[in-house]
Image (cartoon, rainbow, N blue to C red; front, side):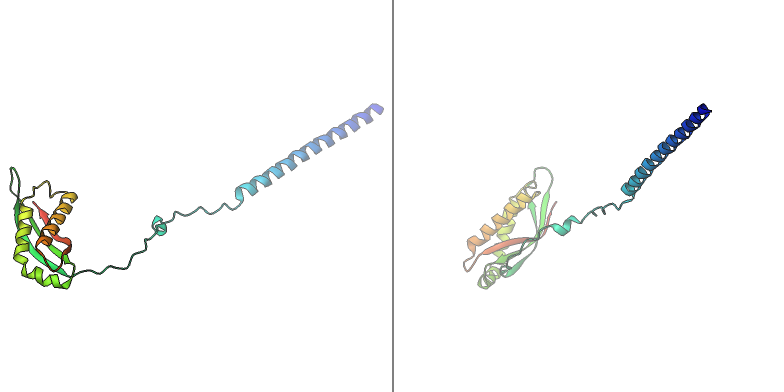
Length: 167
């Protein structure tokens, strides 16, 4: 009978151990599940929206607008230019900015001389020279220099092509 009691106590003891082990496993699973739920359900930081790069471009401070001189339009002209095999021409019109008002009347009086100088300078250019930006800038510099050579009351500040076609 003592053996039956020892067997019953052992059986009760092993049931308690199993119950404690199952309770410990359930407790660990609950803690792990709680941590996992907290980790995966927590609010994620809002992703930074792609910002417009144009909003952060520094805008240069503009200087005070300098005085713009009087302008004189030179009517449209067509000039044959130097070419080896095919006939090429330039169709252009331009505006001349002057240094002062006094020279404006002189330019208007000397318009035939200016047109002659412009036509002669452009007709000595090649098709290739007038195709690129550098050639056009060079032509502007030459025109400005040539026109300034016969003006006496002021000078040409800048030349603006208002129409320029090379074919």
